[in-house]
Length: 430
Ligand code: GDP
Ligand code: IMO
Ligand code: MG
Image 1 (cartoon, rainbow, N blue to C red):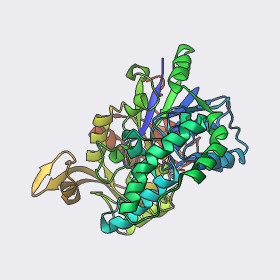
Image 2: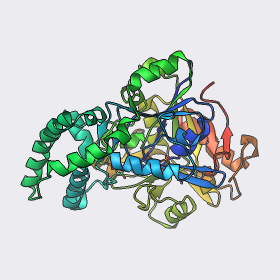
Image 3: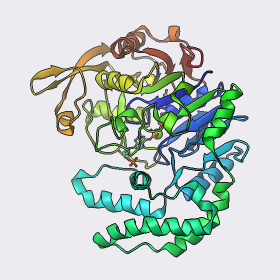
Image 4: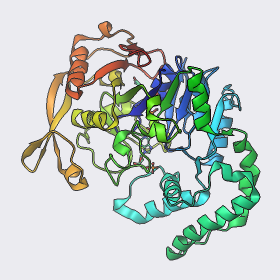
């Protein structure tokens, strides 16, 4: 059995889509297990760009099965739009290559409105969410009042469920002086869209069991990054799901013994979208350069991503928390023109040196990075496909990261293109 989980080891947008697409040549099945269309995974194949939000990145390859697991939150209309968009690029999406879990939670219009109401009301303390209704949908799931894919099957059931969830939402909406949300129109629209969702729905846990018996290789595709995990991230500036690798098991319905290898996707510098602590952030020319050269604009919201130096302390910590076996280091080429490169190896907090990221947001905002300096290589790594072909100074930087984070760098990505990837160790055969 050779199944791997891919997770982001920073604040998301590490290049998971590119690496999952690249690895999926070897996989049979690709599974999304948490998050929703807050994710934006970019694939570039022979010059054509695909932006996936909810669909697993395996969808673009022929003869692969894509699965949206129970841990994902699905906006049914956003899902249909994405399916149509990807089909318009010549990719086939049907019951033969896509399965949706019957027990996945739906994101409904009142979730999106609640996300917006809260963000707008929060002023300076807003989270900077993607405003896709992710948080409110997960709250309803944990609050045991969600509407799930399987609820679309009967009008009677849907009616009861909508009454139940709207009692809760309308109480809050009234309290906030907002219009109550009417059930009838939403029910009508949901019943209209139901067949387009239900045609894909199956018991995912059972399908995964079948695939395991058939010795198929399964690749679990994480969304966001571990620093956005609701337990382990920079709370409250996080998303509302667990983004760590073990979520692959709960979010799809397979045991931990189904997972053999965890690959952490890691940018050769750091970015973050939205609010929250970011110790190595660069609000200067170098930060702007990274943003421009790395095209650091959100895939989902087009917001400018904040950029900074590689934070070894953070990545070493997320590797431990998530049980990462190896790293795919991405976007090394973005550093090609820099004279000097900094790597954060410790923090100073209230005059003391510390070797980990503290849990309180106040401390997280106050830590000062301690840097180790490296000479820039000032030559092109873009498109390089063999480690030996990298400039010596780039090798020194990569090796220093590897040593500091105490984890093998198993591949290096040198451009957005699928083919521009250096393979050092195959995660399917480590
Ligand atoms: P994800 O959310 O982790 O899948 O990452 P995104 O797709 O949101 O953001 C990563 C961006 O970097 C995308 O535009 C990718 O096409 C691009 N990218 C991925 N790997 C590389 C790389 O090695 N070099 C460069 N220059 N761009 C890359
Ligand atoms: P991928 O999968 C980067 C961030 C938002 C915000 C916080 C909460 O492309 O790496 P949410 O809408 O989830 O309630 O927002 O999380 N965020 C992401 N940042 N990449 C993502 O996904 C993200 N998904 C959510 O910007 O700070
Ligand atoms: Mg992204």
